[in-house]
Image 1 (tube, rainbow, N blue to C red):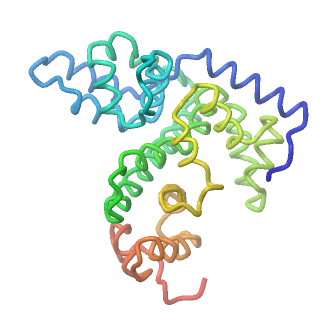
Image 2: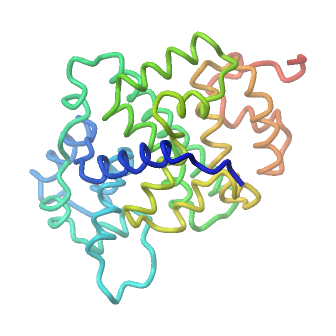
Length: 286
């Protein structure tokens, strides 16, 4: 069990949940452009094609799932996480009319280049994590690999949202951690924001009525479940490799991946490292 929140932390968290719930989440410029291009050519317009574009954009994925939850039919008993399934239930035209691919991330952070770069890095990292998670789920013969992919894609949603809506605070957190690498992320976040990003994430998923399965898959505390271990490991590997393929944490990631897939750590490394020469040598002590 975590440490109970103070009243101040709880108030700060609740205020941000309310702020983000009322906000229109921004999407990537390339997402909006790709969706517009598809819409202009009706012969190429399909749920699969549109889903493929949405699937690369974490915030638009959340906008779609949230809209579907808010407007679901009484007869709908199953939770929907898969983007293509959500589109089919909603209808492609309804999606275009009701889930706008605006505002744009690049406009929301206009004049705040540092924050924009950090946000794009987090989105890129999340995209990489989602690809890892799906690949490993398929290797594990998990038929629900798309759910695992989306959980990895949205694992750091709260961080993306705060870069979008509280860029100055996030830059402060980044500067503090860069200056003192021993600082724990949670402690710095609580000091600057008044709460931890993980707590904001859980609160938003509940407030927005997003599928319970999504919350479970994104909860690192459930890591005994294979699907959750897959998501957590994919997120960790994407985060560590973003620092370069010589990051000191990577050998442990390869070992854990090997255990997940039941293969040697050296084989796990070959699976994920784009160029074997760029990876750290597992035979050397770290």
